[in-house]
Length: 258
Image 1 (cartoon, rainbow, N blue to C red):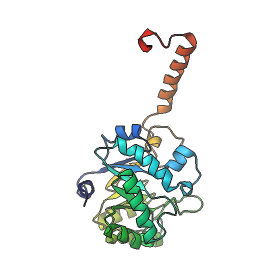
Image 2: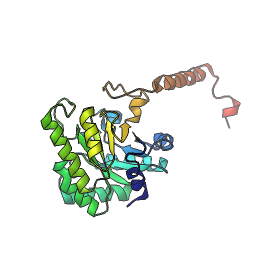
Image 3: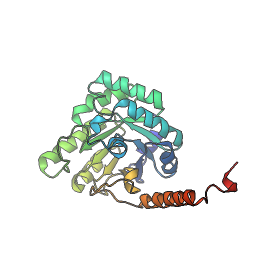
Image 4: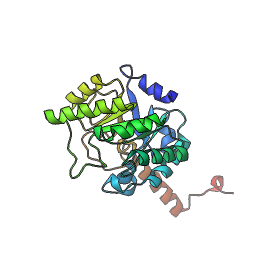
């Protein structure tokens, strides 16, 4: 197994896993120094293209962005989301996973679903494709407004079954999205593979967020998003200074000219 995957597995019950998204080399180079996993998420659909749903994201888009990210990642585990309708059956999943890994040189793929995709996950793992699972809110298949999961006993039992199915199928970890803290805690204790939460409480083995959200580049108002800086203000300030210097003839001075 990939030594980077082993590093993630070895963090279970030992140290928190840090994961952030990247869609380009420049961001990837910065976060690679600080995180364990860099995820090229299909969230790029909404973050970069203003899509209303991740279903509009296709494999070509994911591959092109991951190629750029790969240039900036040297330390972290690089994971690519397989987008909607690219893993409807075992053969399709394997074909697209092989293409994604070959074209981008990423380390693993991420797919959404629990019991529903267990045979697909198992098939990929048997063919030496590392898989990160994803349960709870699954944006590719959720219809209507997103609602947190695990509020009642039926949902809790389903989440546990989904998590166990992914573990038994050979996934090396599971993203828990918008799952109530009590059930996230139970799942994290039940499975031997790491759980990575997004809106799923502090009880997970790690956390993931969208980098553009924590930098304040988006207008995300989701409960679990914490904005650590308003980078828009910094960019606006720099652009304003550039504009003013161009208009007043201060730029470019001799220092910046040939």
